[in-house]
Picture 1 (tube, rainbow, N blue to C red):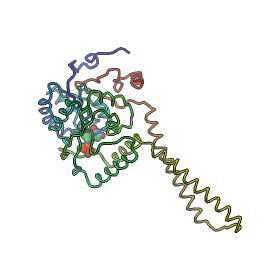
Picture 2 (cartoon, protein in one colour):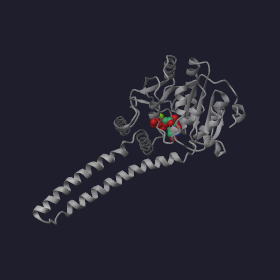
Picture 3 (cartoon, rainbow, N blue to C red):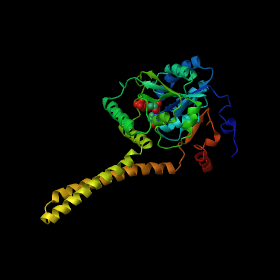
Length: 349
Ligand code: UDP
Ligand code: MG
């Protein structure tokens, strides 16, 4: 496949040297937060580095986030972005941001100013000190509702028990990743993306930087309990196969008990003759095991569904518009190519 240069691919984008730092910001209906965020972020970046870019990913917003982003790019070309054809979710938006971040280090942060831009200074210091995976560690969850906090806590407890990767407490998406770590993440084409798990899975020299989560500047959280449940299931199922394997154990246990019971009834019948009553216990055990079988089938279904989503090999996202930026690797730029052959090239990498 022929390589195309950046300037050939997007007439709007100017070929410029790679910046040192890229900041990736996923946005879903964040029109009100965009300008305040830029106003706080740019001075911090100017203090820390000579060259930077901010890559906003408009995740199919329904408000005028895209217009505000276009205006911001016109005012300052270091502000760039892409706009999805529809809402693909925060995890995919982050993946797309990484595909378009050219920096030697990439910082990921939310658009709602809950992640204080000033903390970035410490991130960059740690990066200069040799850390490749610098994560913000929230010191409290005061801003979340009590129910959400409780559910979050339970989820992380379960993840700690079953998950095959250790998650550092309080670590989220707010972080700095060295180019090496970014490339490692970009090499993971999975659809069900649980970034927190992936960040931990890739390893590299890591360190936490404590920070206090601010209140959301404008608007409200985009995560309903339904979305959070989906996210939690994706997280657990992509990092553990214990729910699948547990049925082997339960099955063996139940069969052993059944064998012992069978022996008991055989001896009892031989000694005392046929004993007809026992309808209630029979019904209860039939219902109980029918329930267990359906449950295990359901869990199998969850995994099969995810396998199905992966094997379809659809592009992770579709770009509707680029604002002053291009994917780092044009051959990997399948998402907005009209040629399906590009998608094949991505999957073979
Ligand atoms: N977000 C996104 N796509 C979505 C939902 C959220 O890009 O489908 C972005 C959102 O604009 C914000 C970040 O992800 O920048 C975190 O979202 P939010 O503040 O709603 O989550 P919370 O802070 O409640 O976890
Ligand atoms: Mg938020």
